[in-house]
Amino acid sequence: VQLQASGGGLVQPGGSLRLSCAASGFIRRIDFLGWYRQAPEKQRELVAGVTKGGRKNYADSVKGRFTVSRDNAKNTLYLQMNSLEPEDTAVYYCKAQNAWGVYWGQGTQVTVSS
Image: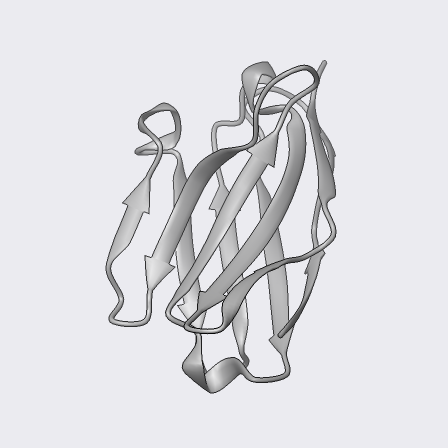
């Protein structure tokens, strides 16, 4: 499974961004797709994820602001981020998981600053 993330950038507080993660390869057996982030000097943390069955989960810090979605026809995972805060600044990574392993995409930088 190969993952290609895009959509990061610089945005002012209160603004919005949408991240995309395009999956290719052995995608039919993906059980979980998720977005993680890592800020400087902090551990990587789960932001939002969605299972093959459509169950979604979010970090408490992003509930009500971020929405994760999965387009199976396009093999793409999205993260709609609204009401962005400086604390959301981080490198965002997408992750896929199936019975054979865990796969990471390259990161995309999100910077929230005025």
